[in-house]
Image (tube, rainbow, N blue to C red):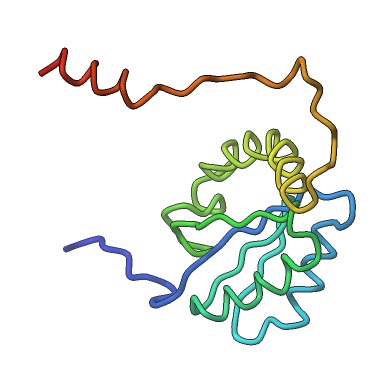
Length: 151
């Protein structure tokens, strides 16, 4: 097919690593990634990193990064590698399509982090009787009656 653009990094994956943390900054995760980077390409961004390489290598680097602050570091697949002319803002001008989606996502990941932290160390908050709801389940007898009515 005429005009087809060959893949720049065949056999690789690209992942975004977003950080929204009070313990670490994008610079901190970049330094941590460079410690174990091996054969991956790392691109620093305002929200974290882009990591491109063989899938096993990328996952290894990400695991090392996430150990820093697991509830506040997020990973997302990217469909195109860095510099791909189909998506690169150097070729398209302006913000890269999809950047505004990242900006939107960053607005609500703080809430996700709170939930993840709660899962890691659930608080022993006592539940008051007024908060407890007594629910009666459907008895087997009533269930059988409903089934017979529908049959």
